[in-house]
Image (tube, rainbow, N blue to C red; front, side, top):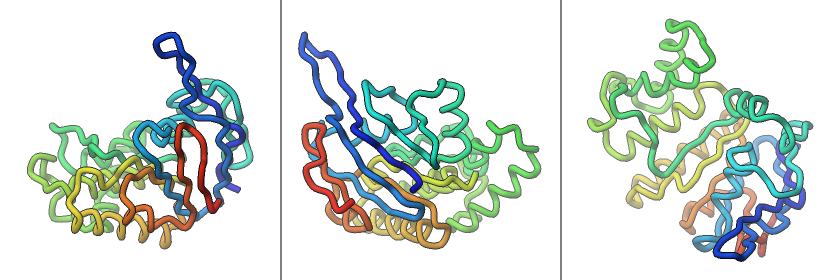
Length: 225
């Protein structure tokens, strides 16, 4: 078992009412799973991704990662877990516009204070893996949307994470590019046994999941977990 949520509850106050953004959600992921999380807007999908590794804190419930409970540890401890073991891929790519492709990819290693020569070597290897070795010195604005997302994927895997959290990774891409990115995520999942948890609105993207969760109003209403 790599990641487990037990009765996850996240509540917000809104206009005098108490809203259950996540309403006692439970699931279990094994190493190498590819789980897709679907549901209508406001169903709690992105909240779940943010909550699992402490970007927002739970109201109650437990999160267990690699055998250790992590929902009740300090901000410093959970930040260290994210830096070492988690990769994030976002719909917006989240590339720094004034950094080159390779500089963007090197960021997770720079945060770990790895020597710059080693950062560059590893980033160059990863960019070759994602098919962008000829774009290393380009700025984000000089890349297509699909290339920018591949840079974001390279950045997410450079530190050999155990799990990737992907929030609508194909949301800004046309169908052909979406398929390219989904196939690449499947490749990463199968070749490296990196667990992937992907939030998506796309039925095509959801079909890539070996496990599926469907949320509505903060509750799991359908699951093959």
